[in-house]
Amino acid sequence: MSILALPFLACLILTGIYVYLGIHIVRRGIIFVDLALAQLAALGSTVALLIGYDPSDRTGYLLSLGFTVVGAVVFSLTRQRREKIPQEAIIGIVYVVSAAAAILVLDRAPGGSEHIRSLLVGDILTVAPDDLIRMGILCALVGLLHWVLRKPFLMITFRPENFGESGRSIYLWDFLFYLSFGLVVTGSVRLAGVLLVFAYLVVPAVVSLLFTEGLGKRLALGWGLGGASSALGLWASYRFDLPTGATIVCAFGLMLVLSAVIRMVYVPRP
Image (cartoon, rainbow, N blue to C red; front, side):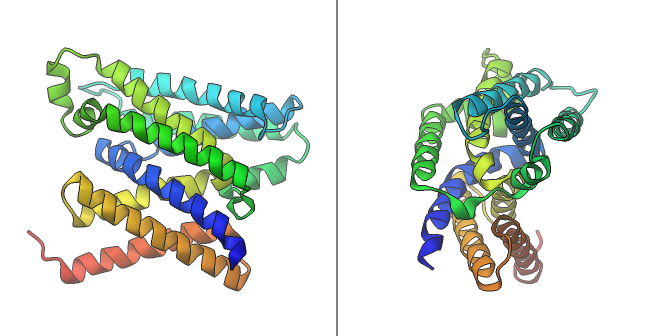
C-alpha cells in the first residue's frame, strides 16, 4: 500500500483547492466551466505533441496555459447581468469545439489514442515527488491569492448585484478568478485527467451545499468527502486492479448517491 502514498497526497492537494473553487463554480451556476478549461488545457498539450514537444515539459505547459488564458478571457467577457444567451451555453460550445479540435489534432499526432485516454483519466498513480511538489506550490499560491482577495471573489459569487454597485469592474475580477482557476486546471489535468478534475470540483461542493450553510462548514464537509472518496477509489483500484482515475471518479459518484439518500431519509424538508 506504500505505492499509494504519493497518489493519495496528490488527491488531498487536489481536494484542498478544488473544493473551494467548486463552491464558487456551483454557486455561480457554471458547472461545466471546469470541463471547458480542462479541455482547452488538453488541446494545448495535444498541439504541443503534434509539433514535437513533450506535453509535460515547459513548452507543453505554456501552450496549455495559453489556451486556458484564452478561455478565461472569453468566459469573463461573456458574463452579463441580463443574459440573452446563458453563459453555460457559451461554456458548452467552447468545450465541444475544443474537444473536437483535440481529436482532429491527435488524429495527426503519434500515439494519439493513448494520449486521449490519458487526458480523460490521467495517470495519478504514477505521480512523482517533483510533480507533487510543483502541484502543491501552485495550489498553495492560488489559495493564498484567493485568501488575500477573498472579499471581492466571494461577493462576485454570492452577491454579484452588490459588486456592480461598488463601482468595480466585474469583468476584470471575473478574469482574475478564471485565470487563477485555469492555472490550477492546467497544472493538474495532466496528472488527474479531465474527468477526475471535474469530480473533485463539483461533487464535494454539491454535497456541502446540500447539508450545510456557511463557507467554513461547506469547506470542512467538502474536504472530508474528497479525502474519503480519494481513499476509497485508490483502495478499490489497488484491490481489484482497476484504472485509478476512473475508479476514483466512480467513488465520488457513489458518495454523491449515498449523500442524496441520507439527505432524503434523515434531513427534513423545510
